[in-house]
Image (cartoon, rainbow, N blue to C red; front, side, top):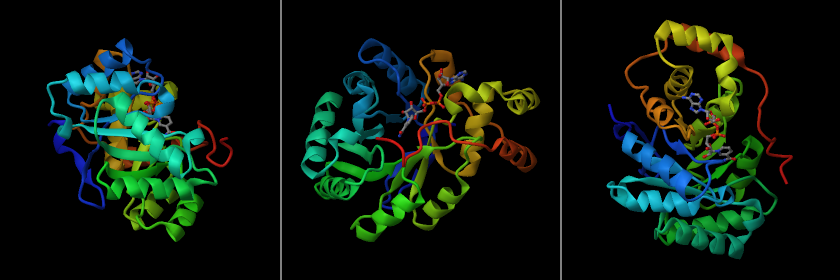
Length: 272
Ligand code: NAD
């Protein structure tokens, strides 16, 4: 089954693919062009970047050069912390579009919650209403950040992209988002590589005859959210999307829950 058929509808009816391709730490130009082209050829239709990744130019080239029409690719970028504020955000969005060589984005996110996110969100609402972006959302927003935003926003965010993996499954946030029809997108879905040391995952990999990455991504899939794994290695890029021909039992899903512990990335209230 191709990844294309595997999507969730956002609140406004726009489909978002269940597995996307992350590009954090993949260098601009050749490396990211190669990785994104490989991903698109393997069937990925969601590409995740951000202005701070410094690779939007290469991502844009790969999308432009691919045989897949632009409207079949779900392209995400994010406004960085120092670009927040109303006018700054509008400018940052325009600059991202230029680097990405496109005239619209599928999803634009506030990268991290900051005190000025109210004004930033107004800019995102304006871009959405003008048709410059098909969906708008946030990233690294905890429940309290969402609650504050929900009090003042005109348009509820459609997506919250957060750190989420077996060690940090974010149950409360997932249930809050479900209630508010906010689709959850998991960053660091493979624990930024740390999942590969877990004995339980090695055991499950043997049991299901799938790689640890496939078990983990299937876990994300069965939980019902979007996941955006990153790799630069063609074989891994291809294998990471090949998760639709097996099912993890409920019992093993529960066993994976025993890995629960701390987040590995920055705490959203401590980022500056
Ligand atoms: P990830 O969990 O996707 O892990 C990536 C690591 O796993 C890499 O080191 C890679 O080499 C390794 N890996 C991938 N597939 C593998 C396989 N099959 N076998 C062995 N190793 C494998 O971590 P990530 O890149 O941080 O997160 C995914 C994406 O999420 C990013 O690329 C980025 O697009 C996004 N992201 C967003 C935020 C945010 O603040 N919104 C933060 C971090 C990442």
